[in-house]
Length: 108
Image 1 (tube, rainbow, N blue to C red):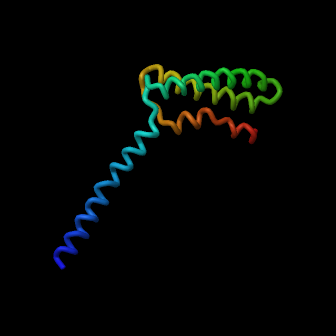
Image 2: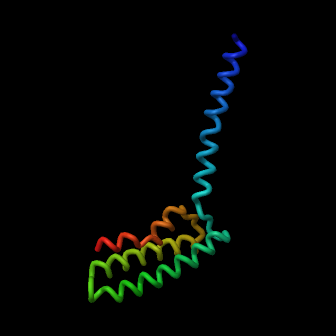
Image 3: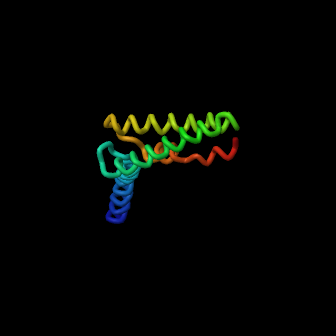
C-alpha cells in the first residue's frame, strides 16, 4: 500500500514539475530573437508591409480617410516592430502577426 501511495505521489510531483517546462518551451517558441534567421525573414515581411501600408494610407486618405488612417496606424505599428528588431530586442511572434494583419480594414 505504501508503495502505491509513493508511486502516486512521485507521478503527481513529476507531472507538476513538467508544467512550467512545457510553458517555458511554448513561450520560447513564440519569441523571435533579434539577429536570428527567423528575425531576418520577418524583417523583410515587415518592411514590405510597412511600404504597402504607407502606400495604401496615401491612396485612401482623400477617398476614405478612415481607411487611410487605419493603414497609417498599421504602418506605424509595423515600423515600431522593425525598430525593435533592428535595435536588438526580441519580439513576440503574436505581435508580428498582429502587425501584419490588415483584416480589420474591411470594417471601415
